[in-house]
Length: 597
Image (cartoon, rainbow, N blue to C red; front, side, top):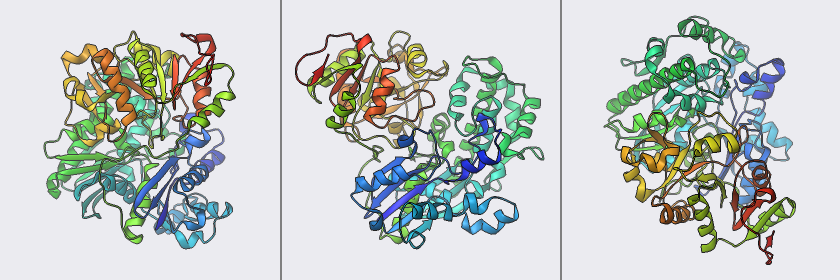
Protein backbone atom coordinates (compact mmCIF):
# COMPACT_ATOMS: atom_id res chain seq x y z
CA UNK A 1 0.00 0.00 0.00
CA UNK A 2 1.40 3.37 -1.08
CA UNK A 3 0.01 6.54 0.49
CA UNK A 4 0.94 10.07 -0.59
CA UNK A 5 0.48 12.68 2.13
CA UNK A 6 0.02 16.36 1.30
CA UNK A 7 -0.26 19.62 3.22
CA UNK A 8 -1.22 23.10 2.10
CA UNK A 9 -4.16 24.89 0.48
CA UNK A 10 -2.90 25.77 -3.02
CA UNK A 11 -4.92 28.94 -3.62
CA UNK A 12 -5.26 30.42 -0.13
CA UNK A 13 -2.45 32.97 -0.21
CA UNK A 14 -3.07 33.74 -3.88
CA UNK A 15 -6.70 34.62 -3.02
CA UNK A 16 -5.59 36.76 -0.05
CA UNK A 17 -3.17 38.79 -2.15
CA UNK A 18 -5.51 39.16 -5.12
CA UNK A 19 -8.41 40.41 -3.01
CA UNK A 20 -6.18 42.69 -0.93
CA UNK A 21 -3.72 44.19 -3.45
CA UNK A 22 -2.40 46.83 -1.06
CA UNK A 23 -1.74 44.42 1.79
CA UNK A 24 1.28 45.08 3.97
CA UNK A 25 4.06 42.49 3.64
CA UNK A 26 3.58 41.88 7.37
CA UNK A 27 0.05 40.62 6.68
CA UNK A 28 0.64 38.50 3.60
CA UNK A 29 0.66 35.22 5.54
CA UNK A 30 -2.66 35.68 7.32
CA UNK A 31 -4.28 32.70 5.68
CA UNK A 32 -4.62 28.97 6.06
CA UNK A 33 -2.69 26.30 4.21
CA UNK A 34 0.89 27.57 4.06
CA UNK A 35 4.02 25.40 4.43
CA UNK A 36 2.96 22.84 1.85
CA UNK A 37 4.81 19.53 1.77
CA UNK A 38 4.61 15.95 0.54
CA UNK A 39 5.37 12.61 2.15
CA UNK A 40 5.23 9.01 0.96
CA UNK A 41 4.40 6.00 3.13
CA UNK A 42 5.03 2.57 1.59
CA UNK A 43 3.63 -0.49 3.37
CA UNK A 44 3.29 1.49 6.58
CA UNK A 45 6.82 2.92 6.50
CA UNK A 46 7.70 6.57 5.87
CA UNK A 47 10.30 6.69 3.09
CA UNK A 48 10.45 10.36 2.03
CA UNK A 49 9.19 13.82 2.96
CA UNK A 50 10.01 17.32 1.76
CA UNK A 51 8.64 20.85 1.88
CA UNK A 52 7.88 22.65 -1.36
CA UNK A 53 9.81 25.75 -0.25
CA UNK A 54 13.10 23.86 -0.47
CA UNK A 55 12.63 23.34 -4.21
CA UNK A 56 11.23 26.75 -5.17
CA UNK A 57 12.98 29.07 -2.73
CA UNK A 58 9.64 30.66 -1.77
CA UNK A 59 9.80 30.43 2.01
CA UNK A 60 6.70 28.93 3.59
CA UNK A 61 4.82 28.58 0.30
CA UNK A 62 1.42 26.93 0.38
CA UNK A 63 1.25 26.20 -3.33
CA UNK A 64 0.49 22.67 -4.47
CA UNK A 65 3.78 20.91 -3.68
CA UNK A 66 4.41 19.66 -7.20
CA UNK A 67 8.20 19.54 -6.85
CA UNK A 68 8.06 17.86 -3.45
CA UNK A 69 5.57 15.31 -4.78
CA UNK A 70 7.75 14.49 -7.78
CA UNK A 71 10.84 14.11 -5.63
CA UNK A 72 9.11 11.96 -2.99
CA UNK A 73 7.70 9.60 -5.61
CA UNK A 74 11.09 9.32 -7.31
CA UNK A 75 12.79 8.64 -3.97
CA UNK A 76 10.23 5.91 -3.25
CA UNK A 77 10.69 4.48 -6.75
CA UNK A 78 7.00 4.75 -7.65
CA UNK A 79 4.89 6.59 -10.20
CA UNK A 80 1.69 8.58 -9.74
CA UNK A 81 -0.43 5.63 -10.88
CA UNK A 82 1.18 3.43 -8.23
CA UNK A 83 -0.17 5.58 -5.40
CA UNK A 84 -3.13 3.85 -3.78
CA UNK A 85 -4.41 6.69 -1.62
CA UNK A 86 -3.81 10.45 -1.40
CA UNK A 87 -4.12 11.91 2.11
CA UNK A 88 -4.55 15.65 2.64
CA UNK A 89 -4.11 17.37 6.00
CA UNK A 90 -7.35 19.37 5.83
CA UNK A 91 -11.00 18.32 5.75
CA UNK A 92 -13.15 21.37 5.20
CA UNK A 93 -15.84 19.50 3.26
CA UNK A 94 -17.70 18.62 6.46
CA UNK A 95 -18.02 22.38 7.10
CA UNK A 96 -18.91 23.42 3.54
CA UNK A 97 -22.37 24.76 4.35
CA UNK A 98 -21.25 26.81 7.35
CA UNK A 99 -18.40 28.40 5.42
CA UNK A 100 -20.62 29.24 2.47
CA UNK A 101 -23.24 30.85 4.72
CA UNK A 102 -20.45 32.92 6.28
CA UNK A 103 -19.43 34.12 2.83
CA UNK A 104 -16.05 32.40 2.81
CA UNK A 105 -14.50 31.62 -0.62
CA UNK A 106 -15.05 27.93 -0.04
CA UNK A 107 -14.79 26.53 -3.57
CA UNK A 108 -11.74 28.64 -4.43
CA UNK A 109 -9.76 28.19 -1.22
CA UNK A 110 -11.00 25.48 1.14
CA UNK A 111 -12.60 22.78 -1.00
CA UNK A 112 -10.82 19.45 -1.48
CA UNK A 113 -11.27 20.06 -5.20
CA UNK A 114 -8.47 22.64 -5.11
CA UNK A 115 -6.02 19.80 -4.54
CA UNK A 116 -7.86 17.20 -6.61
CA UNK A 117 -8.06 19.52 -9.63
CA UNK A 118 -4.43 20.57 -9.21
CA UNK A 119 -3.23 16.98 -9.38
CA UNK A 120 -5.53 16.26 -12.30
CA UNK A 121 -4.06 19.20 -14.21
CA UNK A 122 -0.64 17.61 -13.65
CA UNK A 123 -1.83 14.49 -15.46
CA UNK A 124 -2.89 12.37 -12.49
CA UNK A 125 -5.90 10.13 -13.04
CA UNK A 126 -8.62 8.86 -10.68
CA UNK A 127 -7.62 11.48 -8.13
CA UNK A 128 -11.06 11.92 -6.58
CA UNK A 129 -11.40 8.18 -6.06
CA UNK A 130 -8.07 8.01 -4.26
CA UNK A 131 -8.36 11.26 -2.30
CA UNK A 132 -8.80 11.14 1.48
CA UNK A 133 -9.18 14.41 3.44
CA UNK A 134 -8.01 14.18 7.06
CA UNK A 135 -9.06 16.55 9.81
CA UNK A 136 -6.26 19.03 10.34
CA UNK A 137 -5.74 18.39 14.05
CA UNK A 138 -5.98 14.64 13.54
CA UNK A 139 -3.16 14.93 11.00
CA UNK A 140 -1.12 16.97 13.49
CA UNK A 141 -1.86 14.46 16.26
CA UNK A 142 -0.82 11.47 14.16
CA UNK A 143 2.38 13.27 13.17
CA UNK A 144 3.49 13.23 16.80
CA UNK A 145 1.91 10.00 18.03
CA UNK A 146 3.17 7.63 15.35
CA UNK A 147 6.91 8.40 15.59
CA UNK A 148 6.80 8.62 19.40
CA UNK A 149 6.52 4.86 19.70
CA UNK A 150 4.20 5.30 22.71
CA UNK A 151 1.42 2.74 23.06
CA UNK A 152 -0.50 5.19 25.27
CA UNK A 153 -0.23 8.97 25.48
CA UNK A 154 -1.99 12.27 25.87
CA UNK A 155 -1.78 14.14 22.56
CA UNK A 156 -2.16 17.91 22.50
CA UNK A 157 -2.36 19.94 19.28
CA UNK A 158 -2.19 23.74 19.31
CA UNK A 159 -1.81 26.07 16.33
CA UNK A 160 -3.41 29.13 14.81
CA UNK A 161 -6.39 27.17 13.62
CA UNK A 162 -7.54 23.92 12.12
CA UNK A 163 -10.82 23.83 10.23
CA UNK A 164 -12.85 25.20 13.17
CA UNK A 165 -10.65 24.66 16.22
CA UNK A 166 -7.36 26.00 17.55
CA UNK A 167 -6.49 23.37 20.16
CA UNK A 168 -7.36 19.70 20.46
CA UNK A 169 -6.70 17.14 23.17
CA UNK A 170 -6.70 13.41 22.43
CA UNK A 171 -6.13 10.23 24.36
CA UNK A 172 -4.14 7.71 22.32
CA UNK A 173 -4.27 4.00 23.05
CA UNK A 174 -3.03 1.22 20.78
CA UNK A 175 -2.72 3.62 17.88
CA UNK A 176 -6.28 4.97 18.05
CA UNK A 177 -7.12 8.59 18.86
CA UNK A 178 -10.01 9.54 21.14
CA UNK A 179 -10.82 13.24 21.04
CA UNK A 180 -11.28 14.60 24.56
CA UNK A 181 -11.56 18.33 23.96
CA UNK A 182 -11.35 21.12 21.41
CA UNK A 183 -10.94 24.88 21.82
CA UNK A 184 -12.51 27.18 19.20
CA UNK A 185 -10.59 29.56 16.97
CA UNK A 186 -11.63 32.68 18.91
CA UNK A 187 -9.54 31.36 21.83
CA UNK A 188 -6.51 30.49 19.75
CA UNK A 189 -3.16 30.70 21.52
CA UNK A 190 -1.47 30.63 18.13
CA UNK A 191 -3.44 33.62 16.88
CA UNK A 192 -2.80 35.50 20.13
CA UNK A 193 0.95 35.00 19.74
CA UNK A 194 0.82 35.94 16.06
CA UNK A 195 -1.21 39.10 16.73
CA UNK A 196 1.37 40.10 19.34
CA UNK A 197 4.11 39.34 16.80
CA UNK A 198 2.40 41.63 14.28
CA UNK A 199 1.89 44.26 17.01
CA UNK A 200 5.66 44.35 17.52
CA UNK A 201 6.19 45.00 13.81
CA UNK A 202 7.09 41.48 12.70
CA UNK A 203 5.37 39.32 10.09
CA UNK A 204 2.27 37.44 11.19
CA UNK A 205 2.53 33.66 10.94
CA UNK A 206 6.25 33.78 10.19
CA UNK A 207 8.27 35.78 12.72
CA UNK A 208 6.96 34.38 16.00
CA UNK A 209 10.37 32.83 16.64
CA UNK A 210 11.85 36.35 16.71
CA UNK A 211 9.51 37.31 19.53
CA UNK A 212 10.48 34.15 21.40
CA UNK A 213 14.13 35.14 20.94
CA UNK A 214 13.48 38.71 22.10
CA UNK A 215 11.57 37.70 25.24
CA UNK A 216 14.54 36.76 27.48
CA UNK A 217 15.88 40.32 27.20
CA UNK A 218 12.76 41.74 28.85
CA UNK A 219 11.07 41.88 32.24
CA UNK A 220 7.57 40.37 32.13
CA UNK A 221 6.42 42.29 35.20
CA UNK A 222 5.49 45.51 33.34
CA UNK A 223 2.92 43.93 31.05
CA UNK A 224 2.11 40.76 33.00
CA UNK A 225 -1.37 41.95 33.94
CA UNK A 226 -2.27 42.60 30.28
CA UNK A 227 -1.84 38.96 29.38
CA UNK A 228 -3.10 37.54 32.68
CA UNK A 229 -6.41 39.32 32.08
CA UNK A 230 -6.44 38.23 28.45
CA UNK A 231 -5.66 34.50 28.57
CA UNK A 232 -6.29 31.76 31.12
CA UNK A 233 -7.48 28.17 31.51
CA UNK A 234 -11.04 27.37 32.54
CA UNK A 235 -10.50 24.29 34.69
CA UNK A 236 -14.17 23.34 34.81
CA UNK A 237 -14.17 22.85 31.05
CA UNK A 238 -10.46 22.18 30.58
CA UNK A 239 -10.24 24.82 27.89
CA UNK A 240 -8.28 27.95 26.99
CA UNK A 241 -10.16 31.23 27.33
CA UNK A 242 -8.99 34.42 25.64
CA UNK A 243 -11.04 37.47 26.57
CA UNK A 244 -10.65 39.63 23.48
CA UNK A 245 -12.98 42.65 23.47
CA UNK A 246 -15.88 42.53 21.03
CA UNK A 247 -14.76 42.98 17.45
CA UNK A 248 -11.06 42.53 18.19
CA UNK A 249 -10.68 39.61 15.78
CA UNK A 250 -12.39 41.26 12.79
CA UNK A 251 -10.50 42.42 9.70
CA UNK A 252 -8.02 39.60 10.18
CA UNK A 253 -6.56 39.99 6.70
CA UNK A 254 -5.54 43.55 7.65
CA UNK A 255 -3.38 42.31 10.49
CA UNK A 256 -6.11 42.33 13.16
CA UNK A 257 -6.02 46.14 13.55
CA UNK A 258 -8.63 46.16 16.35
CA UNK A 259 -6.75 43.58 18.41
CA UNK A 260 -3.54 45.56 17.92
CA UNK A 261 -5.30 48.77 18.96
CA UNK A 262 -6.46 47.01 22.12
CA UNK A 263 -2.89 45.94 22.89
CA UNK A 264 -1.60 49.46 22.25
CA UNK A 265 -4.14 50.92 24.66
CA UNK A 266 -3.36 48.28 27.28
CA UNK A 267 0.44 48.42 26.90
CA UNK A 268 2.27 50.89 24.64
CA UNK A 269 2.71 52.00 21.03
CA UNK A 270 5.54 49.98 19.49
CA UNK A 271 8.22 51.37 17.21
CA UNK A 272 9.22 49.93 13.85
CA UNK A 273 11.76 47.13 14.45
CA UNK A 274 15.33 48.21 13.77
CA UNK A 275 17.18 45.07 14.86
CA UNK A 276 18.07 46.49 18.26
CA UNK A 277 16.66 45.61 21.66
CA UNK A 278 14.28 48.19 23.14
CA UNK A 279 12.84 47.98 26.64
CA UNK A 280 9.13 48.28 25.79
CA UNK A 281 9.22 45.66 23.08
CA UNK A 282 11.40 43.27 25.09
CA UNK A 283 9.21 43.58 28.19
CA UNK A 284 6.08 43.01 26.10
CA UNK A 285 7.61 39.92 24.46
CA UNK A 286 8.66 38.63 27.89
CA UNK A 287 5.14 38.98 29.29
CA UNK A 288 3.64 37.31 26.21
CA UNK A 289 6.05 34.40 26.38
CA UNK A 290 5.52 33.99 30.12
CA UNK A 291 1.73 33.84 29.66
CA UNK A 292 1.84 31.41 26.74
CA UNK A 293 4.04 29.11 28.80
CA UNK A 294 1.85 29.41 31.90
CA UNK A 295 -1.34 28.63 29.97
CA UNK A 296 0.19 25.64 28.18
CA UNK A 297 1.62 24.24 31.41
CA UNK A 298 -1.73 24.71 33.15
CA UNK A 299 -3.73 23.16 30.31
CA UNK A 300 -1.43 20.19 29.74
CA UNK A 301 -1.15 19.55 33.48
CA UNK A 302 -4.94 19.61 33.77
CA UNK A 303 -5.43 17.04 31.03
CA UNK A 304 -2.61 14.80 32.24
CA UNK A 305 -4.30 14.62 35.63
CA UNK A 306 -7.76 14.18 34.15
CA UNK A 307 -6.73 11.47 31.68
CA UNK A 308 -4.29 9.65 33.93
CA UNK A 309 -1.73 9.52 31.14
CA UNK A 310 1.97 10.11 31.79
CA UNK A 311 3.37 10.27 28.27
CA UNK A 312 2.86 13.30 26.11
CA UNK A 313 2.84 13.98 22.35
CA UNK A 314 2.73 17.56 21.05
CA UNK A 315 2.25 19.02 17.57
CA UNK A 316 1.04 22.19 15.88
CA UNK A 317 2.94 25.42 15.35
CA UNK A 318 2.57 26.50 18.98
CA UNK A 319 4.87 23.66 19.98
CA UNK A 320 7.76 25.01 17.95
CA UNK A 321 8.08 27.33 20.95
CA UNK A 322 10.98 25.54 22.61
CA UNK A 323 10.89 27.70 25.75
CA UNK A 324 7.32 26.69 26.52
CA UNK A 325 8.16 23.10 25.66
CA UNK A 326 10.87 23.10 28.33
CA UNK A 327 8.35 24.06 31.00
CA UNK A 328 5.87 21.45 29.81
CA UNK A 329 8.62 18.80 29.87
CA UNK A 330 9.42 19.79 33.45
CA UNK A 331 5.92 18.85 34.66
CA UNK A 332 6.39 16.09 37.28
CA UNK A 333 3.55 14.06 35.74
CA UNK A 334 5.41 13.70 32.41
CA UNK A 335 7.41 10.47 32.13
CA UNK A 336 8.08 10.75 28.41
CA UNK A 337 7.51 13.37 25.73
CA UNK A 338 7.71 13.64 21.96
CA UNK A 339 7.26 16.77 19.82
CA UNK A 340 7.01 16.42 16.05
CA UNK A 341 10.10 18.19 14.57
CA UNK A 342 7.89 19.48 11.73
CA UNK A 343 5.19 20.75 14.07
CA UNK A 344 4.00 23.35 11.60
CA UNK A 345 1.62 22.51 8.79
CA UNK A 346 4.35 20.78 6.79
CA UNK A 347 4.14 18.00 9.37
CA UNK A 348 0.50 17.33 8.54
CA UNK A 349 1.66 15.70 5.30
CA UNK A 350 3.26 13.02 7.48
CA UNK A 351 0.33 12.78 9.86
CA UNK A 352 -2.30 12.57 7.13
CA UNK A 353 -0.35 9.83 5.33
CA UNK A 354 0.15 7.86 8.53
CA UNK A 355 -3.53 8.24 9.49
CA UNK A 356 -4.78 6.93 6.16
CA UNK A 357 -2.18 4.16 6.07
CA UNK A 358 -3.27 3.08 9.55
CA UNK A 359 -7.03 3.27 8.96
CA UNK A 360 -7.27 2.13 5.34
CA UNK A 361 -3.87 0.86 4.29
CA UNK A 362 -3.31 -2.21 6.41
CA UNK A 363 -1.52 -0.57 9.33
CA UNK A 364 1.85 0.97 10.10
CA UNK A 365 5.31 -0.53 10.42
CA UNK A 366 6.42 -0.90 14.06
CA UNK A 367 8.55 1.89 15.50
CA UNK A 368 12.00 0.41 16.14
CA UNK A 369 14.04 3.48 17.00
CA UNK A 370 14.03 7.27 17.25
CA UNK A 371 12.26 9.30 14.59
CA UNK A 372 14.63 10.02 11.70
CA UNK A 373 14.11 13.63 10.50
CA UNK A 374 16.56 13.26 7.60
CA UNK A 375 13.87 12.51 5.03
CA UNK A 376 14.78 14.84 2.18
CA UNK A 377 17.00 15.00 -0.87
CA UNK A 378 20.57 13.73 -0.91
CA UNK A 379 23.31 14.46 -3.44
CA UNK A 380 26.32 12.51 -4.63
CA UNK A 381 29.89 13.81 -5.03
CA UNK A 382 29.23 13.84 -8.79
CA UNK A 383 26.27 16.17 -8.24
CA UNK A 384 28.48 18.48 -6.21
CA UNK A 385 31.25 18.37 -8.85
CA UNK A 386 28.79 19.41 -11.55
CA UNK A 387 27.73 22.39 -9.46
CA UNK A 388 31.36 23.31 -8.74
CA UNK A 389 32.23 23.22 -12.43
CA UNK A 390 29.74 26.05 -12.93
CA UNK A 391 31.47 28.19 -10.28
CA UNK A 392 35.01 29.16 -11.39
CA UNK A 393 35.10 31.77 -8.63
CA UNK A 394 35.40 29.00 -6.03
CA UNK A 395 38.44 26.89 -5.22
CA UNK A 396 38.00 23.38 -3.94
CA UNK A 397 39.67 20.13 -3.02
CA UNK A 398 38.06 16.71 -3.00
CA UNK A 399 39.27 14.46 -0.20
CA UNK A 400 36.17 12.29 0.18
CA UNK A 401 34.57 11.59 3.54
CA UNK A 402 37.86 10.40 4.94
CA UNK A 403 39.66 10.97 8.23
CA UNK A 404 41.32 13.98 6.61
CA UNK A 405 37.93 15.49 5.79
CA UNK A 406 36.71 15.35 9.38
CA UNK A 407 40.10 16.42 10.70
CA UNK A 408 40.14 19.53 8.52
CA UNK A 409 36.60 20.51 9.49
CA UNK A 410 37.30 20.02 13.20
CA UNK A 411 40.57 21.95 12.89
CA UNK A 412 38.69 24.85 11.32
CA UNK A 413 36.09 24.91 14.09
CA UNK A 414 38.76 24.65 16.79
CA UNK A 415 40.62 27.54 15.14
CA UNK A 416 37.49 29.72 15.46
CA UNK A 417 36.55 29.58 11.79
CA UNK A 418 32.91 29.47 10.69
CA UNK A 419 32.08 26.66 8.30
CA UNK A 420 29.06 25.32 6.43
CA UNK A 421 28.39 21.58 6.66
CA UNK A 422 26.33 19.86 3.94
CA UNK A 423 25.87 16.14 4.48
CA UNK A 424 23.45 13.41 3.46
CA UNK A 425 19.69 13.75 3.35
CA UNK A 426 18.08 17.11 4.02
CA UNK A 427 16.20 17.67 7.27
CA UNK A 428 12.39 17.75 7.27
CA UNK A 429 11.04 20.59 9.38
CA UNK A 430 12.39 24.06 10.17
CA UNK A 431 15.45 23.11 12.24
CA UNK A 432 18.91 22.45 10.80
CA UNK A 433 20.09 19.29 12.54
CA UNK A 434 23.60 18.87 11.22
CA UNK A 435 22.95 18.05 7.56
CA UNK A 436 22.46 21.61 6.25
CA UNK A 437 24.16 23.63 8.99
CA UNK A 438 26.51 26.49 9.73
CA UNK A 439 28.89 25.44 12.50
CA UNK A 440 31.29 27.30 14.75
CA UNK A 441 33.09 27.16 18.06
CA UNK A 442 30.64 28.20 20.83
CA UNK A 443 33.31 30.05 22.79
CA UNK A 444 34.69 31.75 19.70
CA UNK A 445 35.57 35.41 19.56
CA UNK A 446 32.36 37.50 19.21
CA UNK A 447 30.84 34.43 17.58
CA UNK A 448 27.21 35.51 17.89
CA UNK A 449 27.96 38.96 16.48
CA UNK A 450 30.01 37.51 13.62
CA UNK A 451 27.38 35.00 12.53
CA UNK A 452 24.37 37.28 12.92
CA UNK A 453 26.01 40.23 11.19
CA UNK A 454 28.28 38.86 8.49
CA UNK A 455 26.81 35.44 7.78
CA UNK A 456 23.07 35.37 8.50
CA UNK A 457 22.28 39.11 8.08
CA UNK A 458 19.68 39.03 10.84
CA UNK A 459 18.71 40.77 14.08
CA UNK A 460 21.44 40.92 16.71
CA UNK A 461 19.17 39.65 19.49
CA UNK A 462 18.52 36.31 17.77
CA UNK A 463 20.14 33.42 19.68
CA UNK A 464 22.00 30.41 18.37
CA UNK A 465 21.60 26.78 19.29
CA UNK A 466 24.22 24.23 20.32
CA UNK A 467 24.60 20.74 18.90
CA UNK A 468 26.14 18.64 21.62
CA UNK A 469 27.27 15.04 21.92
CA UNK A 470 24.89 13.05 24.07
CA UNK A 471 27.82 12.04 26.28
CA UNK A 472 28.53 15.72 27.08
CA UNK A 473 24.98 16.97 27.66
CA UNK A 474 24.76 16.48 31.41
CA UNK A 475 27.99 18.27 32.22
CA UNK A 476 26.98 21.32 30.17
CA UNK A 477 23.18 21.55 30.48
CA UNK A 478 20.27 20.73 32.79
CA UNK A 479 17.61 18.73 30.95
CA UNK A 480 15.28 15.80 31.50
CA UNK A 481 16.64 14.18 28.36
CA UNK A 482 13.36 13.63 26.53
CA UNK A 483 13.22 13.07 22.77
CA UNK A 484 12.61 16.76 21.84
CA UNK A 485 16.23 17.44 22.83
CA UNK A 486 17.31 15.51 19.74
CA UNK A 487 15.51 17.94 17.45
CA UNK A 488 16.09 21.42 18.97
CA UNK A 489 12.56 21.52 20.34
CA UNK A 490 13.30 22.25 24.01
CA UNK A 491 15.55 24.67 25.76
CA UNK A 492 17.81 23.58 28.60
CA UNK A 493 19.48 25.63 31.29
CA UNK A 494 23.23 26.08 30.96
CA UNK A 495 25.18 24.91 34.00
CA UNK A 496 26.99 27.89 35.55
CA UNK A 497 30.32 26.08 35.58
CA UNK A 498 29.98 25.36 31.84
CA UNK A 499 29.06 28.85 30.72
CA UNK A 500 32.54 29.80 29.51
CA UNK A 501 32.64 26.72 27.26
CA UNK A 502 29.39 27.61 25.46
CA UNK A 503 29.26 31.41 25.85
CA UNK A 504 28.14 32.04 22.28
CA UNK A 505 24.95 30.00 22.58
CA UNK A 506 23.84 31.12 26.06
CA UNK A 507 20.71 33.24 25.83
CA UNK A 508 19.88 36.14 28.11
CA UNK A 509 17.98 33.82 30.49
CA UNK A 510 20.88 31.33 30.68
CA UNK A 511 19.08 28.84 28.45
CA UNK A 512 20.01 27.21 25.16
CA UNK A 513 17.95 25.35 22.54
CA UNK A 514 19.96 22.15 22.45
CA UNK A 515 20.30 19.38 19.91
CA UNK A 516 21.68 16.19 21.41
CA UNK A 517 23.65 14.21 18.83
CA UNK A 518 24.03 10.42 18.78
CA UNK A 519 25.32 7.80 16.38
CA UNK A 520 21.90 6.25 15.79
CA UNK A 521 20.51 9.24 13.88
CA UNK A 522 23.49 11.24 12.68
CA UNK A 523 26.68 9.15 12.58
CA UNK A 524 28.62 11.58 10.38
CA UNK A 525 27.70 14.59 12.51
CA UNK A 526 28.58 12.62 15.63
CA UNK A 527 31.96 11.80 14.12
CA UNK A 528 32.63 15.47 13.47
CA UNK A 529 31.68 16.48 17.01
CA UNK A 530 34.00 13.84 18.44
CA UNK A 531 36.84 15.31 16.38
CA UNK A 532 35.95 18.76 17.71
CA UNK A 533 35.94 17.40 21.26
CA UNK A 534 39.42 15.96 20.77
CA UNK A 535 40.64 19.48 20.02
CA UNK A 536 38.57 21.69 22.34
CA UNK A 537 37.66 19.35 25.19
CA UNK A 538 33.90 19.62 24.56
CA UNK A 539 31.78 17.93 21.92
CA UNK A 540 29.66 20.98 21.25
CA UNK A 541 29.34 23.49 18.38
CA UNK A 542 27.16 26.40 17.39
CA UNK A 543 24.61 24.94 14.95
CA UNK A 544 22.47 27.29 12.91
CA UNK A 545 20.68 26.72 9.62
CA UNK A 546 22.61 27.00 6.36
CA UNK A 547 20.70 29.90 4.82
CA UNK A 548 20.38 33.66 5.12
CA UNK A 549 17.52 35.83 6.29
CA UNK A 550 14.39 35.16 4.23
CA UNK A 551 15.78 32.05 2.55
CA UNK A 552 14.53 28.50 3.19
CA UNK A 553 16.97 25.96 4.53
CA UNK A 554 19.30 25.09 1.66
CA UNK A 555 18.58 21.85 -0.15
CA UNK A 556 20.89 21.38 -3.16
CA UNK A 557 24.58 21.90 -4.03
CA UNK A 558 23.97 24.74 -6.46
CA UNK A 559 22.09 26.82 -3.90
CA UNK A 560 24.70 25.91 -1.28
CA UNK A 561 27.51 27.23 -3.46
CA UNK A 562 25.61 30.39 -4.41
CA UNK A 563 24.87 31.17 -0.78
CA UNK A 564 28.38 30.33 0.39
CA UNK A 565 29.88 32.69 -2.20
CA UNK A 566 27.79 35.59 -0.90
CA UNK A 567 28.43 35.39 2.84
CA UNK A 568 31.41 35.50 5.16
CA UNK A 569 31.93 31.79 5.75
CA UNK A 570 35.48 30.47 5.88
CA UNK A 571 34.83 27.11 4.23
CA UNK A 572 32.09 24.86 2.97
CA UNK A 573 32.32 21.12 3.57
CA UNK A 574 30.00 19.38 1.14
CA UNK A 575 29.91 15.63 0.47
CA UNK A 576 33.70 15.22 0.68
CA UNK A 577 34.61 18.55 -0.98
CA UNK A 578 36.32 21.39 0.87
CA UNK A 579 35.33 24.66 -0.80
CA UNK A 580 36.70 28.20 -0.41
CA UNK A 581 36.11 31.49 -2.17
CA UNK A 582 39.17 32.59 -4.14
CA UNK A 583 39.43 36.02 -2.53
CA UNK A 584 39.23 34.75 1.04
CA UNK A 585 41.09 31.42 0.73
CA UNK A 586 43.27 30.87 3.77
CA UNK A 587 45.27 27.88 2.60
CA UNK A 588 46.90 27.11 -0.75
CA UNK A 589 44.96 24.86 -3.13
CA UNK A 590 46.21 21.61 -4.53
CA UNK A 591 47.07 21.07 -8.18
CA UNK A 592 46.43 17.35 -7.87
CA UNK A 593 43.51 15.73 -9.72
CA UNK A 594 40.28 16.39 -7.90
CA UNK A 595 41.04 19.96 -6.93
CA UNK A 596 40.91 23.49 -8.30
CA UNK A 597 43.22 26.10 -6.85
